[in-house]
Length: 333
Ligand SMILES: NC(=O)c1ccc[n+]([C@@H]2O[C@H](COP(=O)([O-])OP(=O)(O)OC[C@H]3O[C@@H](n4cnc5c(N)ncnc54)[C@H](OP(=O)(O)O)[C@@H]3O)[C@@H](O)[C@H]2O)c1
Image (tube, rainbow, N blue to C red; front, side, top):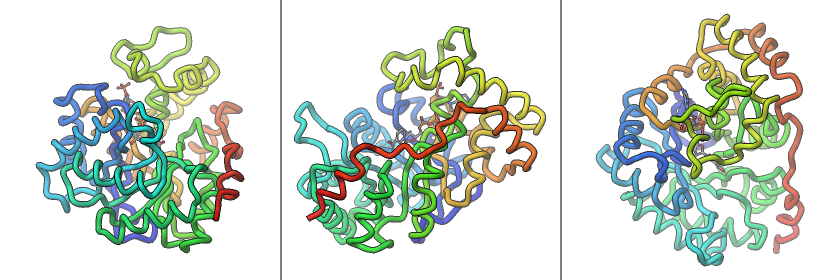
């Protein structure tokens, strides 16, 4: 496993990391969750990403039980805040009161005194950005988080926070990024790199679609994420025939390059120096080991251009600015 520096922090995170979004919040049993987590340690993965909202605390609780058996300095732990934590809509967002409450709840579930990385899961346009920044800084001052990051913020939102607190405020940006979803390259990679902020990208395998196991016109494999009704997020988008046909065109390219399709998909995201880590998901330990093997794999220029040609018009490449980008800035002050 290779490791990369996380933004301007002193953290060295594994290029392949493990997340607990769907699979570890009740989608798979605790035993499998444990097996995947232990496989991650075996494979040299030292970076684990969760969020308070995953299973409304269930993912953090599962990892609290499992990770607390390991020395705290043997893993780098990231969580997030913003999502709605109960049926009360007020139990969400990035107000100072919520941030103060949610970090304590996360630490309790994770059975630790601090997280290495505390991330804004989205931008909260209902709270002045100054208030959110100050509340996050307080979490760091109190020693409850070592570093801060954000997920899926637009350039305007990122810049609004940097204008207040400087580039050292954040060390990471967490966008969706894969061969099928390339928009962040144009949107946020440049701005973040200029401010010493690394990308740690989610769904680098497009939730498993980039393993090639979903085939156009064929049944969804029974043991896969999209066969489980509670886990089929964005199913219609990622399982459309044009997407699945493009993915099948990638299979011979990977074979020709002497690697599996998931390895090629992960090596493809890791080719960018702006990335510190690809946050993968897994439902079984074999997947963790298979995905970890992508670390250090280089793709030749010929393979990269064959991939571009095979994907054609399928990927989302251009900027996909959230409609609330300007709203967020207007809320300042
Ligand atoms: N910031 C955000 O808003 C946000 C949003 C989403 C996710 N995330 C983070 O990103 C992490 C990863 O997201 P993700 O789970 O969608 O990532 P992903 O790596 O794109 O997809 C993971 C899923 O694909 C399947 N898979 C993985 N490796 C495989 C292999 N080698 N062969 C066959 N199938 C394989 C598994 O599902 P099955 O075996 O069940 O098919 C696995 O759960 C999350 O856990 C979370 O930490 C963040």
